[in-house]
Image (tube, rainbow, N blue to C red; front, side):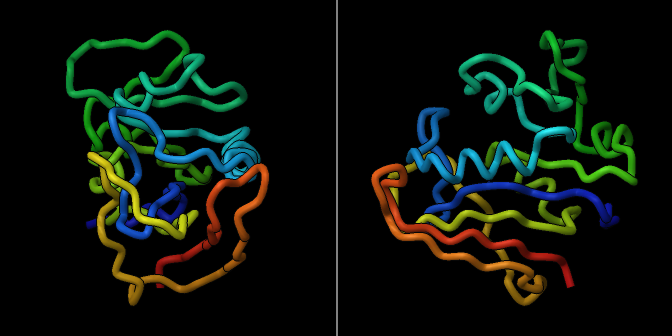
Length: 166
């Protein structure tokens, strides 16, 4: 399987690998949402159509939004479209870092291609219907690790990690 050196996954994961329920996030961590915006602004973000439909105001501003769907000729206004993972991979500019933002099936399909993971590990278990695939940490090298306690703006303690594929 080909690794594309500039494919990154950005995700917030609970201790039990939960990432969502009923097409919604499981928590609100204000500082993490700001981190997501800072990291992805000015870049291409890639998502499945359920994730796209979960966005409150349509395409995220100041980013190229690419939506992957298996429904031929389906279009979403303001978005680039891909009709398979392979189709998406062919559209990427290899010089630009691209951010995969969900959901569960999209993460699972892109994980073998990713060279970097931007993780927010939320230190709690949650009931969910969507989970991130299990990460084999032996395949990754830690670049950054910052732990944050719960606060007024951030209801749960969490750790930001950046990992690069070995």
